[in-house]
Image (cartoon, one colour):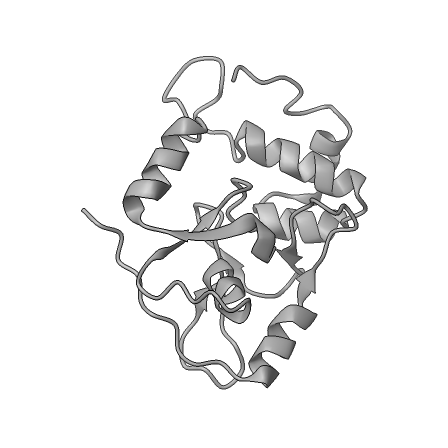
Length: 170
């Protein structure tokens, strides 16, 4: 069954300025970019929705980032090349269909196992924990990371400090 997407509405230069002013860019030249704390909402899968002032509905922030980068995904999906669903860095995003998204998911081992060494109740995947650790080392604040990854500040510090998510079975 295809994933349903809704084409994005037209955006103005003021919309673009409002959005990009609220994105925390990484000092790491390859790092992910996230929305600042208090902007948007994160769903259970880690994707961020944002509602621009004057617009009637919220949109997926990564699809908005693609559109503002001149690559409106239309009815297709916005794919995360970095495997971080809350990342907004245009260089980490691509346009693709549901089949390509599923192929990438399977090739990159993004399915959480139902049992085994990895906890089925874990809040983050190994890739997300690694991305969080790198972002913290690059200077992104614990508050921004906690919001972006849907975890507490103490979890951010535990992961960054090597007390949680210290080894991967993948």
